[in-house]
Image (cartoon, rainbow, N blue to C red):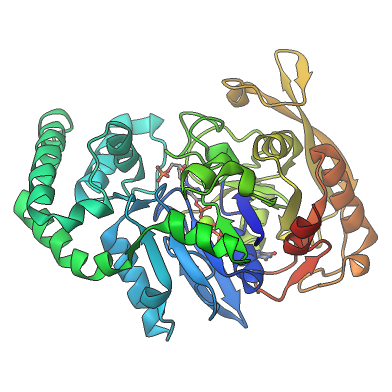
Length: 433
Ligand code: GDP
Ligand code: IMO
Ligand code: MG
């Protein structure tokens, strides 16, 4: 039986999941996306060359790795084909290696129009979505009116279903939001055209993953977004529209929950968030600007500047609990090089009380309680050996480990695949668990 590992964002997304998935992918036969859509932006850097992926799993650069898009993903045919073309121009045979679940909900142009119209209507209360139509596509799924990849097999029935759903959404767009509508004939034409290229990739992903695992292949599940953006457990309503936590790897791929051997949570050595919503440790002044500058904190999907702040151990500990993290990977340690002091939030002060767990609805009002530690002046960038890290950096990591109550398995010291310290190989570890 093969081993399975789930990689989850433990903060508000952009923790460096893509880099770590790409690195671990050399030990697996399959990489699977199971939720979200092209709102994700996962950056891979190999020998200085950068590739940004949105829908295609981050194992695509490895020759022997097959990539899967599970039923839990909302799939924009246009975004997928644009990404495949980008990869094929780089000489990567993406289409041949990619298998897409027939159960994937199709994300269509009217979802994008609705996303924009809703954000505009919210005004100052806007969520700050990526504008990719993710929320409206998931709404259609739970309302049981979504079009799925398998629906493309019967073009006439597809045309009828599209008409029904577009009539509804165009009514809202025109009469409630007073915004642009989607043209039925144009949408149908576009999707049926793209279907020629998409349909050959349609597959029984559940069955294929079952076979791979049975025949001894290792499988890596690649989370998108992060735990605090989970629609149930995140900072609602400032969240994305899918479950981003471990359980979603099962429902979004059709692999049974008991079959996951190791869950790796990715977190930065500090915290970032893009979009609106509570962020207790946010630094709004020059300290935040310094982190943004040093960490190059600009969104991989929208280019928006990311909000930056200190490491939040209260939120991260909840992430350990929610995801059942077997180990943590701390990324971007190098960004903290050269600071005199570093801070970790170990409690939230709300209404005169200090809490060590986040409470729904209170995050907006809490004051972070900080532990301050001395920083380090040496350069950690590119280091691959834990014992060679400055003593203060090791002490900082140790304190994070203690507060979060999970072992640190890996530390990332730069964007490149090679700039990584592996203290515990999650795939070897999962065999012995
Ligand atoms: P993801 O969405 O979780 O895959 O993360 P993103 O790709 O959106 O953002 C992470 C950014 O940090 C990317 O630009 C990465 O190249 C970069 N990165 C990842 N790990 C490190 C690291 O250890 N140090 C530095 N300096 N940059 C890193
Ligand atoms: P990766 O996979 C960071 C955020 C948006 C917004 C909220 C809802 O690269 O970590 P949506 O478009 O999903 O309806 O937006 O979620 N968001 C992300 N933030 N990283 C991401 O993905 C994100 N995907 C969505 O900024 O606050
Ligand atoms: Mg990202």
